[in-house]
Image (cartoon, rainbow, N blue to C red; front, side, top):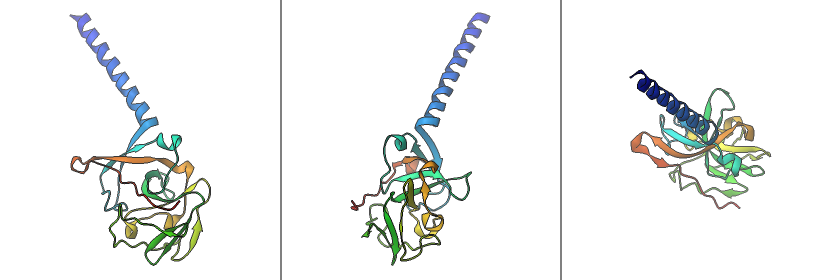
Length: 187
């Protein structure tokens, strides 16, 4: 009897160790959950939603305009932010009359924002000012432009601060969906 219980316990411990090792590998190298905090990505992503973020995608490929990313907050190193990539290294970005311009072309953001949304400058990127995104940096904005602390306020996100590309909302269950990537005709 003791031998049977011992065998069951050993099997249980082995199973738990293997499951924990698989979880650590997935969490550390492949996918990580991220909770949306605040309204900066509204109307597409809501406070309290959980989003899966692909960690390896950044190492295997490049970022594109319109992708939703998670990165270490420039202001508070203990927080992570979720924003949309607007400008890539070498791009020029300008906000003017409520619109966003990249490389002199007005962005059509209708694939993820209502047509009446307006974007205005901040303390880093002021209204009508054109800036160039430096190498190894990105210009990002929240979808809820009036209520987002983003590159317009604190500047560029450097490559070393990037965590991953968000791709799937998995909680709450009634909000399950793939992350909307914006598509722009810039290049």
